[in-house]
Image 1 (cartoon, one colour):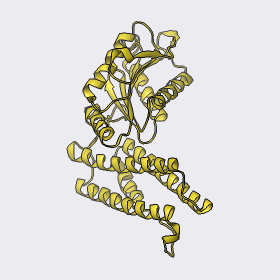
Image 2 (image 1 turned 180 degrees about the vertical axis):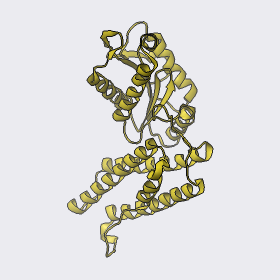
Image 3 (image 1 turned 90 degrees about the vertical axis):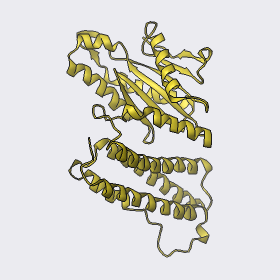
Image 4 (image 1 turned 135 degrees about the vertical axis):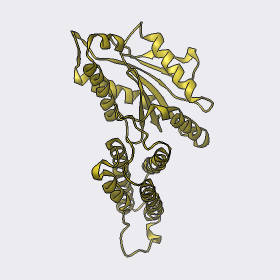
Length: 303
């Protein structure tokens, strides 16, 4: 879906959002950590440029709802965490805990990252999302994951990559019409959106296969996200077409990449693990920390 208003106008609006939020960030840090040295008659004001961009982007469907939802969630989290920092600073008259500040920094960096990435998406091809599922486009998955690997090498910020696949999808397609099988895929896509955080990424790879990039997460946090996803699916209690006893299920494989990993090899090994396990057990979560086969194992397998 192409952006249907001037790219120059859109990019200029995003540049203003970046500038405003960078200035606001510096002022916020001063208010939180050096409140006695900040001599302003008026309280710290939140920037309004994003709200103005959002109004324009939403007008007449100028931007796909997936982008709007993603950025709106990040922006809401950003302001919520900034309010919490200011409240701690004013009420306790001391600096907030480092954990609270790091959480805010994570959201702030991801918000700016998504704004910049959206600029690049628009310049390259008009959009970075898959129209069928509303998830991020598969043609960008390797670029995005390699960018996270570079950030891991520079800043030591860990992340996880997971593959999710609907079990026995070939059988599903043979026993269901196209609308029903497409509906299963769209359902999993929606549940993925519910299960990941505002700054995580998810991609539809085709053939009922999804990739999740879970940022700022150790392997235990990544597994928790996959368990949330499976719990959400279990709540749906979806019985398969022409088989009232079989429930829709999925299997997952998750990895915690290391600096020397390559995105293509990482995805390839995740897929190999799922392929090697699909005839043994379904509805599983596979986990490994590196690409060595000796470090891979099945966790919490269910039938």
